[in-house]
Image 1 (spheres, one colour):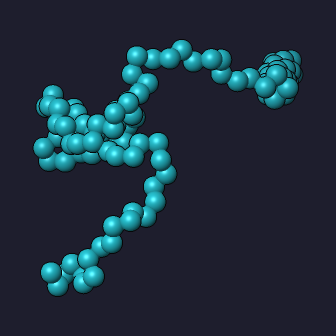
Image 2 (image 1 turned 180 degrees about the vertical axis):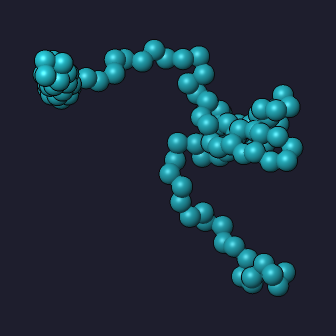
Length: 105
C-alpha cells in the first residue's frame, strides 16, 4: 500500500510541476532573442526537386535577381537568368497576349 501511495504522490507532483511550467511560460511570454545576421541572408530558397538525374534546389539572389539551380547529388551549378522588378508586387503586364489560342498558332 505504501508503494502505491508514494507512486501516486510522485505522479501528482510531476503533474503539478508540469502544469506550473506551462503556466509560467504563458506569463513570461518567451520569445526568441535577436538573431545575428548571417553571411548569406540575401539568398532565398525558392524550391527543390528530385528526379531521375538527382536532387537540386532553386535559389534566388535578392541583391540582383539572379536565379540559380544547385545540384545536390552531382555538384553542379546552373545559372537560369535574372528576375526583373524585384521588390514590386506581381501585377498584370501592359503587353497583351496572343489574340488566338496557342493551339491554333
